[in-house]
Length: 130
Image (cartoon, rainbow, N blue to C red; front, top):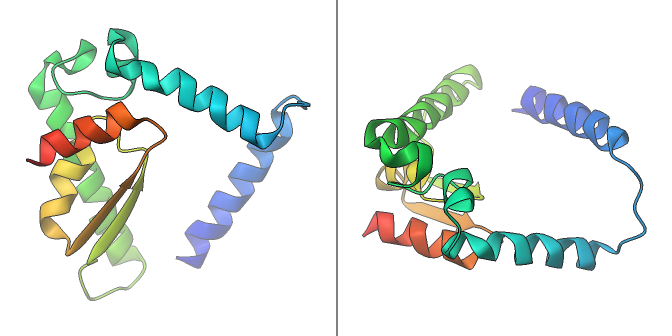
């Protein structure tokens, strides 16, 4: 896991250096993001970008389901590569969008936590789990 953490830190650091400097506060940037993504409730483009089932590219249900299947396979590969002999019991998903990962992963977990800046996305994710 440390190997993945180090790779992530390096990639993140490199990416952040390419971004232009801004005088906006972190709070203002967070509010801008929240204002943008709240539009996913009524905006078909944002629903597509958030992977809402039945919207945009994801009118194809198999394509939508495949997102979760692929991520389940990645979680399993991480478990094997990291040498863990036990199954992961909990997951925190940052940005669950329309819930394709949640639908695939949550039934295998004792605890699944979804965090998203968009209330409509969290509601959509919850709807998929019902």
